Length: 254
Image (tube, rainbow, N blue to C red):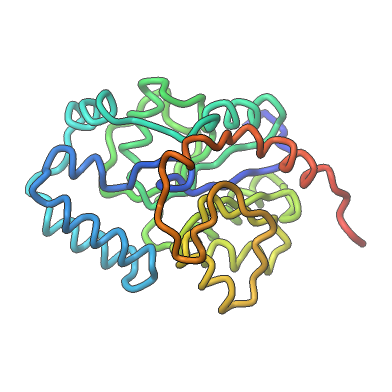
């Protein structure tokens, strides 16, 4: 990689940058298992089961793998991000900030999203390999397989080290308890933590580990408030750009 990045944003995707869930593409093609998929999603994001256990359950539920055409049909009908997310990704690229999607969603989903140019190019991806299609030129240059939620931290750390980016120039964005271990590593390392649409499960994890979420962006559901997608869609993620600029502009304390 020839570009010299001065910082990294490593962010979750589902219900964090997008109103969709990681299994929506499965439910779209197999609506008969939607309720079961939703239950599995809530179990692992609430740290009731591991991501590996969730993947095993899904393999049993899923009649057949999701084909390239089925994934495209889902994206054509349902792809969505919160307002300003593509603009924020492009802003990061334009300002030598590497934007890394670090999600329990599936590699194949993001391959097709990028192939269809639904997002600006993303240099790095950390996601689950349950669905993965043949390599394309539009794929991220660096793809890390994610098998457990704790792997988010490992993949961010590995990639940051390969680029020579110090932890105080790393911004982590997450929304649920599944991002807890990522935030735990970030708090210990000196990264900056942003809660996006912060769920009770992430708030509880952080309080239990004495982790300070540096910035809460969008609706804060930590008080068990009812999800409000209309309010979520009114938030513009480009409003995070000044905060990120301020964070990475700070000099490291001696």
